[in-house]
Image (cartoon, rainbow, N blue to C red; front, side, top):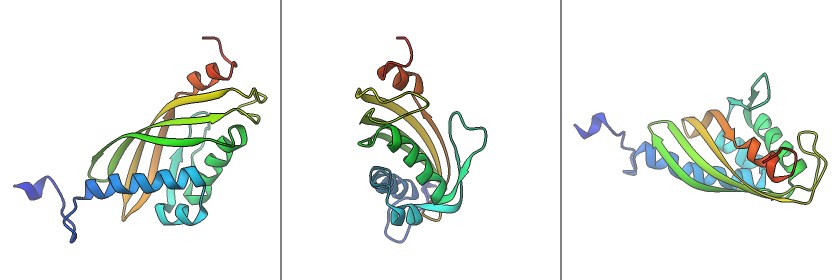
Length: 151
């Protein structure tokens, strides 16, 4: 009966445990913007839905574009993986993003203020690569922390 609920790999780890481990590697990628890790972890056909954009971005280059947009406003930004829940190929992750507002971000000039913002992201994996993501960062909280929105 257990076989119905978990898929064992040759190494004995479940697919879910592997995906949790991959998320730790993914954090290395987003914290370094490594093109090598992008190619390793992200399918060329991956689709990423980004809040505020009418069309999704695709593939490793699309995700690097997202990271570049964040780094343009917060050059020192780092993501901390706080929680991971996996079910088969689906992974939910809660992150904390921390950085200093040193560049233009969403039309807001640099303020020098530090941020600590939560984000909830949902990933779909296939063959060891991300094939889709929907991210829900706390953009209101971010804008409040840099003084661009009232508290």
